[in-house]
Length: 444
Image (tube, rainbow, N blue to C red; front, top):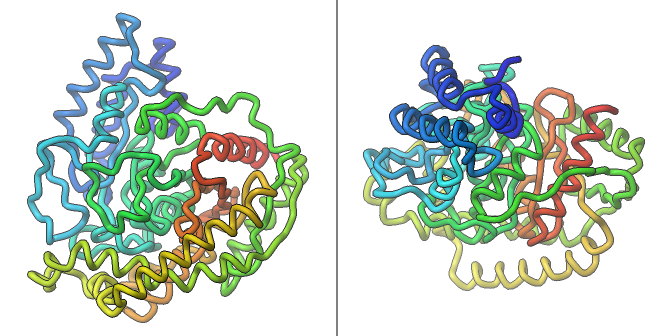
């Protein structure tokens, strides 16, 4: 059994049964990180002292049968925009070089209190403002399937750390797809919770009205357990999860525009398998999604630039130009246009609930409409970077705009994910549907 690549929940059960020791497992992860040729491109910082201290405490609790939960003693990684007390946290930006927070972000503190072990901080896109995962100012992680390809971002190192067996699971963040894109491109499960379902204190912001942290892991169960730790709630009960009888809507239209053949074929194959497992599939285009998408330019960049303008304009030379340009594009949007866009989006969200979502258990769409591009080409061709980045985030952004929880699952086709969108505030229900879909896709 390769325990380094075992799901987090499976590791937790092995610790409970005395088959796995937290100290030994943490040391195995630390040794694997140290030995890996791409470790420096995946981990910005390895918190080995903290990991060893936390593993000893978890070991002692296990011996005394005082474990705090299923993931007590399980080692995970944390994206470098989530504060770790006493550890440099730079959000992938030279603007924050040497920044050391005094204490852990609330989500990290909660997970630590429940016994998870912090292996370190993973590399990410600069200030989380790109879906491709490239960062020439710090490091660009390799795609786990092919190191020449873009890893997906902005939670790039988070996903790769799990895919390459350098963490049991990872915590990243998502503003327009930053959990789901790298999860899909590295054949993992990624879960974006409903907005405002987790505390953001201690997380370096990009756009507070869209930002949310969440897990990247090997299974839906892992994501459910990690979400529960960070939210301070009981994990969704996924026992008996079954896709049979579920009313699923394929969101036609926008998600398939300009899509590549590979992701579409993988998606359709997955939908066919869900149907054979008993899911009720309906294909519906939505005018409300088509109306929401053009609002993106008036919502994301203006807030991001408003938050970061002072730091950016004090030292713009510290930023990679494509990311700098994305931020500065927000300066061209007036306050009145920003407010009007939000008013429109609020109305669209209400219409979506009333006219579309209420008739279905969940919505299906391809996670990313393109396969991961060659990273070197993206670095050399700024126009291609812009084109690929916008298309990469197009489908995932739908969930952010509508304020919905979304889970991406591997389809069995490399770097192709299927997304399952749920209902705002009903994260447990979505995880239950996703677990049923996961089981069906595993056997079909």
